[in-house]
Image (cartoon, rainbow, N blue to C red):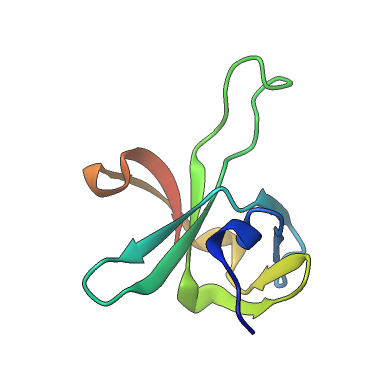
Length: 98
């Protein structure tokens, strides 16, 4: 299957372990040295109808991706494994799946 990065923006991410719908992919992180896709970024949930911004973004490592379909991406990660991540490498505070 050949896929462009722009095609990921139209696919919804769903956690198969919890059934939780995270949202649509907004960005991807690559390792420039190897050219490999490292993780997908999904924007966090909106606060109060979107008037007060959004929550922290979800960073989903490529190892958690189990299946990429025509319109969804299935990941396998436990709900309680979320941890806060604050680092300059990704441009600020984001949630990271471990």
